[in-house]
Length: 260
Ligand SMILES: Nc1ncnc2c1ncn2[C@@H]1O[C@H](COP(=O)(O)OP(=O)(O)OP(=O)(O)O)[C@@H](O)[C@H]1O
Image 1: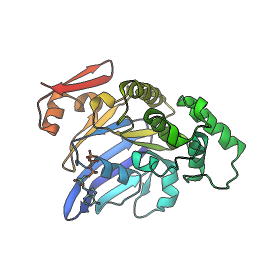
Image 2: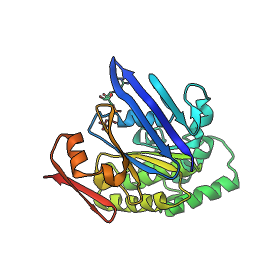
Image 3: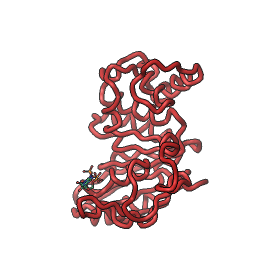
Image 4: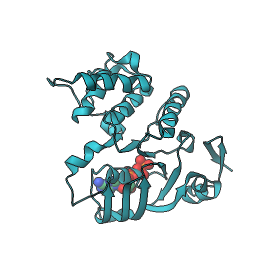
C-alpha cells in the first residue's frame, strides 16, 4: 500500500475567494474514493489538483510521492488517468475508438502519423474488450452513444496502467440502462486488487459503484466529512451538507437518497 495523494492545508484562491479551503486528505492505493458535494463546492477544483493540472495557492499537495511545485508535472501527469467530459471534448469526433484509446499511450488526442507498437495495439484491444467496446474499435468516436463515449473515456484513462485514476462524473447524463452497465463495469474494476487508487466525483449517491470504500464530502470548499463510505454517506451527514432533510439507504453496497 502506498499513498497516492496527500493534501495538507490545500487552499485555492480565485477572484479573492477560497474555492478550496485548507483541505487535508490522504488517499491510499488500495482505496476507492467518491467525492460528493453541492454545486460549486469545489469538487472539480479538487480533482484538478489531484491531476496535477493546477497548483494550490497555499498548502502542500503530494501526488504519487511527488510534491507539486517541486517536481516535473510533465513526468507526473502520464502516471495519472483522468476521464472527464472536458477531456472528451478534445477528442476529434472522426477518431476511431481504437485510436482514442491507443493515443493515450502517447499522451495525445488525435492520431497523426505515429507508428504504434503491436504491443500497444494489443493492449488497447484488450482494454476495449474489458470495457465492452471490443466490437466498436473501428467506429468513429463522434458517432457513439453517450454511454459508449463514457466507457471509451475510461478505457483511455486506464490504457496506460495509471497509478491514480480520476473520474469526473462518469455516469452523468446516462440513461438508466447505460448507467447501470457502466456502474457494473466500474464496480468490477474498483473491486480488483490490481486497480490503482481511484477518486470519482459525482452528484448522486445512486452513481456510486459497488466496491467504493471511502467518501469525502465537500461544501463551500471545505471538507465536511471524510472517511469510510458507510460513515460518510448517511442521512445525517448528507442532510447537513446539502441543507435538506435526506433519507439515505444502502442496499447491498448501492446507495439511494431522497428527501425525508
Ligand atoms: N478559474 C476560476 N475563477 C473564479 N472562480 C472559479 C474558477 N474556477 C472555479 N471557480 C468557482 O469556484 C467554485 C468551485 O468550483 P468547482 O467547479 O470546483 O465546483 P464543483 O463542486 O465541481 O461544482 P459543480 O458541482 O457545479 O460541478 C465555484 O463557485 C466556481 O464558480
